[in-house]
Length: 379
Ligand SMILES: *Cc1c(COP(=O)(O)O)cnc(C)c1O
View 1 (cartoon, helix red, strand yellow):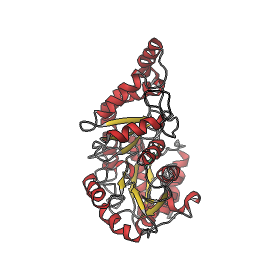
View 2 (view 1 turned 30 degrees about the vertical axis):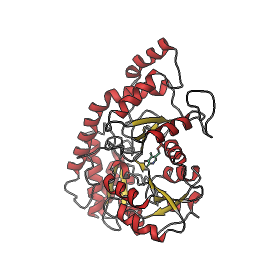
View 3 (view 1 turned 90 degrees about the horizontal axis):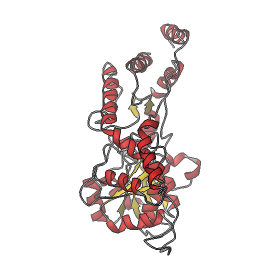
View 4 (view 1 turned 90 degrees about the vertical axis):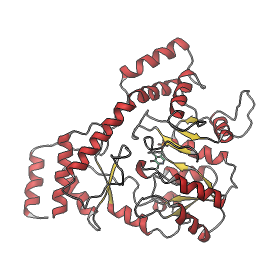
């Protein structure tokens, strides 16, 4: 550490700056939820697909193309699991997933009775590439029945190439668009979005499947409600994964404020991008805060600098997070799962860092992040 680094760190401590959290979710206020709660009081309908949940699903479906069905679930992990189960894939076969994703993707695969096969992501998009995955199929250590491309931190993959992949290979494609509430608008391939508190549109816990495949939507719906479909006969082995009217009240309030919130997310991202213009070696995901928005800011740092940058930011009270750790393939739960060569995943795990980001991150907090980062990189 340089001498000036010592002095600057000392001053940050002297100033007793509050630690800057990596995320600070903001969900609808009690006031915004109240009118919906009053509707529940009047209707006395508390769960099992009441009017509020119906309205929420209609409003979510309207964000996609015509004929899109939305099936809400208690969270995105359940939606992924149930969608895979509804596809009736041969048990024990492989489902290709990126090693570079949140662990929930792998859990969903295992819960659906499939085996995750970790494959590498593209160096630039940080996502599975349809062509590269097709080539990788020839090296698979067993039969591959499905693949889950993941929208990395909210950036959508190229869906056209995945439709081509599915048509050419017969391998079913399910898109994990958990963090892509903003960017997901095409449900030609089934996709799952999370409404968790830490995501860009949060309602606490919640998620949904969007699909134009009516039969798939019907099956997933049955699976969220004991296998029932209009009677009390269980048509298939299922679970209970439905949302209550209280959850829908929060979801509807969140949807009401989404157009304004979305602009705020973009404005905050633009301010952060501008503050980091003097350090072009800190690279954002393509389109982040410009074409699409999300609740996290993950930057790609110069080779070999991430550990030192992270330590310097922490010393300045600026939190960081490696949202996806070292990659799913290295987590103890999946250490024995098969994996392909993963050079890009390894690089990303060592070079990317989640910076503090929030819908209302203040200009002074942004300046503090930029300052700390600029000094760290200058060392
Ligand atoms: C958040 C996330 C999930 C899990 O969503 P939950 O609603 O919390 O279950 C799954 N996959 C990815 C890529 C995520 O970012």
